[in-house]
Length: 317
Image (cartoon, rainbow, N blue to C red; front, top):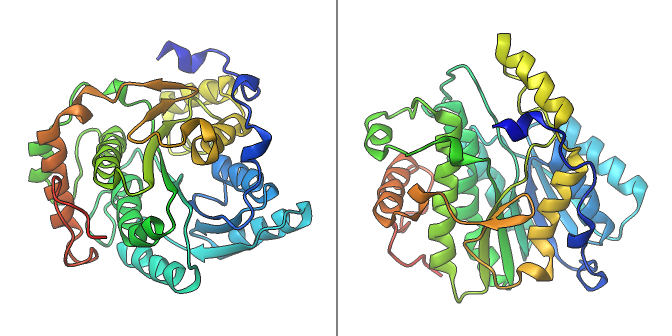
């Protein structure tokens, strides 16, 4: 906690700079959520400069077109497309995935970067609490719907953005299961920890298939994530923002995990800033991950493929 109020790194760590051999992304297709703002936007620029073909996902088409113009003006050989996708709406996520599959023959990297930290309870039209919808159900569904194409493009990578979940001692799956709308007591951290748990499960299921799944806590990065705070928390947020690293540091960490040869073959890895850390103790409990998988399958039954397995079963190829 104290670290949030101390000055953070101002520039990417040169010890982790990408080697030149990793900087040619010609012919690679990268799908990136949260690409119209903050770290995602900067990461998109870095990847485009290396020649990647980008599929940028965001809620607002006007912002997406603005980012495309910026990237085009800066140069880069890759193609840039924008797809409208509201992660709080599972219909929107499914429709977006179908469009991507119809227009892109391969997906080399999927980066689930978008997130929200809503401090007031909001229930989406699908009946999910907003943090759970955007931070867990939306990216989970998008990943599952694109997974066959990602696997067919192997070697491929999936990178999920997370936060510092150490603030949460334990996650009560029974409480989560008892709340059909997922309006739990710690919605933000619980939704992020759940994505970590799903990352570990998927990494195990895809092991040997040429698809790696890793998750990243980028550190205290300057962003709009704290915009929903109010009162004393908002004042604390201003201090945290002043001390935070610039978005370029977070974007560099995203790009590193997504394309660096340093992580070739690494899967199920938790990268906290620049250091590999052990998974949260709760995420290491197989029974809890299996229970989460059952809860997820039930909650997303209207949008998942009908043959969607639960934890411990093989994912259809």
